[in-house]
Image 1: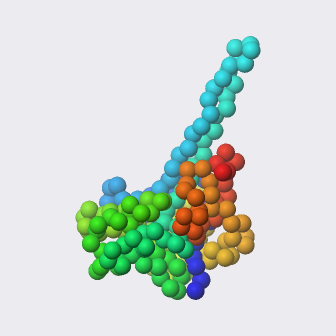
Image 2 (image 1 turned 90 degrees about the vertical axis):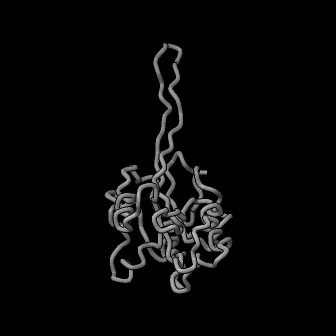
Length: 192
């Protein structure tokens, strides 16, 4: 099996949300259902020096995140109908809508908030890494839409060889929980 995963260059992400819109458009998701999300982080403050001049120590940065197709997916472990499963050929976590009853257990158990309840369907939905596009030799919607090329999808072993193995940044749960197939080049203010 070749496990697929994401590389996210958080240091490069500008928070434009083009990846969110491309994903939403490709999957025709209704309002409130976002397989990919971009979180904004702000920290710091303005202080005054001895002369009364303001000194700024303010930073902001962003993080684009979706399903991480984890090695130990809590959504799969806790799905009572076995609708949520990990594909053997590429490790992508998907949902069998014939089995899904929309109970939301997967959503409650995923530390990344990846599964999304689609009220129109009455079922859970989530990022499937655009496996239909990958099968046609195309790039996933989020990757193709990123104007600064902060997202890359590929075999996780290759991504780790190329970019390292960091999957821990401020704002995300410990990678030890689910072992996400994710590599992040952390923004300088987001390193753990």
